Length: 137
Image (cartoon, rainbow, N blue to C red):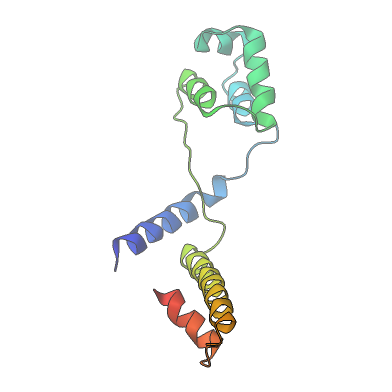
């Protein structure tokens, strides 16, 4: 098994393990955790070393998807949490790569076939077979 395949398998396995936790709370993680810990906006602001309105703005920003990773990390740390950031594949990564390779092979061969036909050297072999052969490389 190639190194790339091992890494892809690891990513797929890891994302499947945590997929049940992907659903973000409606009000956002900061507010959800703050309320679960019984912290007021002011108390969380003290823990983060920022003003109360800054925490309120952070909660709104997170809910809107407009908060920086650094702010999320610092806020999580203030609540004794670890901030986790990752990309989780929506589908099988091997299939995704195969599809992208197929599309790239199609584009390459379409361009090559056009040039060949313009030079009166049209390729006679089956296009699909050539695409599949190129896709494997």
